[in-house]
Amino acid sequence: MLTSVKPEAPNNATPSNRPRRIAHLDMDAFYASVELLRYPQLKGLPVVIGGGRRREDDLTARLREAFPDRDWGPDTLDRIPVDFFPRLKDYVGRGVATTATYAARQFGVGSAMGLMKAAKLCPDAILLPVDFEEVKRISRLFKHTITEIAPVMEDRGVDEVYIDFTEVPGGQREGGRVLARLIQKSIFQATGLTCSIGVAPNKLIAKMASEFNKPNGISIVMPEDLQSLIWPLPCRKINGIGPKADAKLQSHGIHTIGDLAARVPLWLREHFGRSYGAWLHDAAWGRDDRPVVTESEPVSMSRETTFDRDLHAARDRAELGAIFTRLCEQVSADLKRKGYAGRTIGIKITYDNFEKVTRDITIDEATDDPGVIRRHAGQCLKRVDLGRRFRLLGVRVGKLVKPGTEPLAGGRYSEAPSLSPRTARDRSPDDHTDLLFPELG
Ligand code: TTP
Ligand code: MG
Ligand code: MG
Image (cartoon, rainbow, N blue to C red):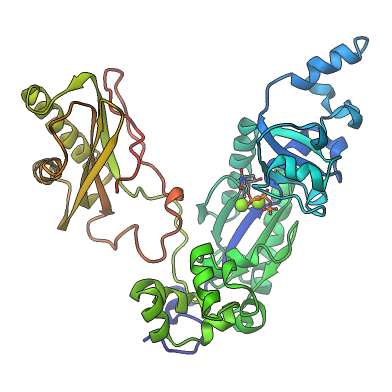
């Protein structure tokens, strides 16, 4: 079943019979480009973003001191002399670069690099803090621009999205290049920023392709390009092969995606496990039928309560029991309101010394029933030390399904868990329930 040598998955075509064309769009040097909108005089110069958040009027206060006769305000930022901006060489601290302009990258400076180290590579680079509010505003703006043109868009973070071109007018022309050009142009008009787009038969390849021609590039990959464009790349370029898996692949002499494609699936499964091994084989052969998901699906739903005073399982039994039942009922109501049921039921406890423990259990049939949730959550509670007082109790239901559909998450194609969306809920003011219940386990 996995030994087929055709580069495309059999169900690559959509009901309309048009071949799938999936785009991955990623903004160029995003945080830095946002700053260049404010300070266009820095265009083309090496600029590094890092060293904390922007504090309003930092620069203007210094400017007023240096040039008291001039009127410095938000409208005159583009007139700040380049010499006036802070330089990397003057930075002292342990901060890291979140990103750098392409001019700075020529010196070897890049994301996640310590600023002191970056200063050695490019001492004259200008150092600016990130302006999260502006970054988020531009992020919303470019995504809105896309959905006006191509409505099937999946949000993958602050500066990137997948877009399904398949059924969009023009989405098939020149493999998607025509539509990609239109989107690039529209984003530039709306924001003044450039982006890079890869269009391919699926998300896996589109994600790689968007990097091929950065910045301001478009790359088109057709099914028949697998061998020439994808196989020469290092395995790490596959989204889902991390440093650990890559090191193991290298130790077996597998360096490129082509090397990976050449291994028989049985060997991969033996060395990397049934599920991941099969996925590696599919990925190397460019097979991926994950849909572009327009609305992010929750991975789990949970409720938790911090008590007014620390409680003890035996001494505060009645009070705790009531709280516990209420949490289960709330999670159940959340699930029902959104139309989900889940197979993993878990609890979380924070002891009075802030030590946290979690326990969960996976059941055969997905449930949204408060009684069933309480029964299994109760069993989880029996597996923790209840002889100590605790300050917080939480109940969570995971492995969610929408009854009548396929599982939503946790499949072998699911991406980094840090990207999983949290559930949003209404909260009444007297409710101590916390929205953020970190993943159990
Ligand atoms: P990226 O898209 O990875 O990088 P980029 O947009 O800066 O550059 P490129 O042209 O190569 O796409 O990340 C988007 C933003 O996310 C980036 O501008 C800053 C932020 N970021 C961090 O804060 N820390 C990191 O380690 C990375 C990689 C990015
Ligand atoms: Mg980017
Ligand atoms: Mg990105």
